[in-house]
Image (cartoon, rainbow, N blue to C red):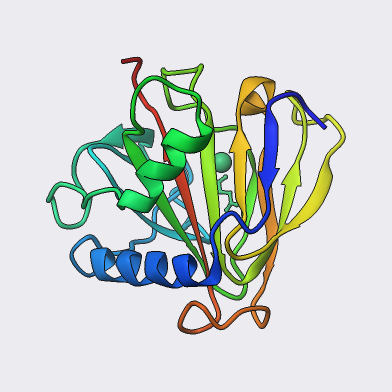
Length: 200
Ligand code: SIN
Ligand code: FE2
């Protein structure tokens, strides 16, 4: 396995997952999910998203970037849940808090193509990811798009840390298994990723 990759299965208990989902659903009422577009082509993304924290990751025809406000409402993003800040303190080994918590919402047919998270300047901070709801088929490759990949299933409550060399590795989600959990209304999956964007 690529250096710096950590898989922490069942990091969150079922009760903690339930509480976290309730908090996210409540925050999404004022900080709603929206559908971003791919840079250049403007093609709609398969996954809907929103953000929590001082910065949020957005994608539109002009490109990828971080910004302090929601593109649809113009308001600041909501706060990062305490459970997520505690997770960051526990696993990141980084001297400053995360600035963005990207909320990705997967429906039955959603997928996320192979990509590198490369829009952050704090290159030494890991990306910390939490899976909630339906299981996902996660694919992890290497530093080049053409490198061999391996696949694993991520279940609700699992945490993945992309640190060290793996911070620059290609990864994506090939599919979700919509009937594998009842945690999220409608059988979807929420993935939360914590990011440090700028160096402290
Ligand atoms: C991501 O790469 O931003 C999300 C990964 C996941 O949904 O597990
Ligand atoms: Fe990613």
